View (spheres, rainbow, N blue to C red):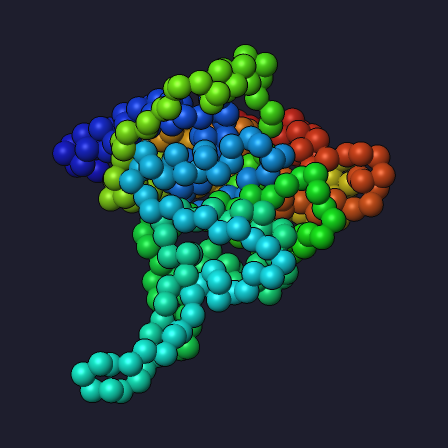
Length: 331
């Protein structure tokens, strides 16, 4: 990396704390969740955001798009939503000069930089599957024509962990497409008091744009250039392999896990660890990056069997056992 390019990247990385400062004008607390959404974007993936109603998930995503100058669209998933409502449809047009009729592709709301797929588990599998090509290939194919999606492109899907009646749980293959599974917890007492004070008075925070879409793309490029020690790569490989019951060294995995994580989980953990290093102002991955991100990377990639449910054992508890059982030795 040349000195001029390195200086430019350092200037971009220095903007991330300013980015978070602007977001904080609107969103109180939730720093870890915000970090994980930014990490998802820098790593070029998508995330699943789970939280009870009333925790400002939509406002959070909209604010992030504003401070990054990214086009934002929200799709409310419902039982009657069709794939065309997301991707778009062809409509019959007429050329007023020649009188000839032709089909014109009318783009759906997925054609945005940041798409909030709200309550994704409330729509049938056919409509959920419509997101698969868009998430993986970053394009939409309709009528034999390929329509590239905007770049950068990020889908943030939300789901409510409480109400499960009338919902359609995401299949494992689609869950695996999400880079991170982020859990949004209740705010602390002081944070909640601050929210109540700000949102019921005359204060209206107006965040300023900090990063442009072009700069976000540069940060995505930088993320892949972040250094990761070979010993840390070996450690990640061991973590992923130890999620699989047939070869694991971890008792909790043998007892509670039916299926472990695939190779994509290792790729996700490496990219996210690199992105977290950037968010923290570093150009090298540390063991802490890996330990922190093992939870959102793995919690939706472990298939727990009935014994775990009977004994009230969560995926996070199993991941804790894995992380604590596999030591890391960085050179």
